Image (cartoon, rainbow over all chains, first blue to last red; front, side):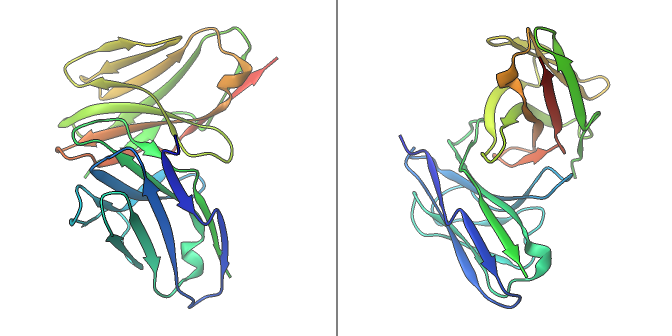
Length: 112
Length: 112
């Protein structure tokens, strides 16, 4: 059982470069999320998708875009990376109405 | 909005002792409270949750207590083991949907 799979696991970008973080889940969950985790700040929600075809902003959406490609996949795009976006990014999914979210292993992104 | 805070960034306990990790939240409309465990290099993993209409819930070696009067919840781990060493996050769900607000985390260190 793969659960939630994120790619890549590590990435180094130069300021101004763009990239897309990929996420896929195989649990048939409706809801998917992107969080970022910074030291001393817990996890902060960037964007989420309550169901296929819908996306909404979370707490820290600036500088990011998302695409809910289908029920399985939810990608996060940085159009012009900035050093402030250096962080660990986690994708998660959950069933409708469920409190339990399943997280991927994370993508460690460094912007230099 | 919602704010969630943990009382101690680090907690050290002896193996076999009980651990208590605390969390405070701000929004009285919150309906679900969840504890996650994050081991080094991994994504958060669900431990236990509790609904707002309950004040106690028990799992295997873990108990969550909810005090809505003072907007406080705690995670108790019985007979703490070295494998319990991790960062523990509380998360709060408010206003329907599945969006969670996370606390900043407590690092639990188990000393042999």
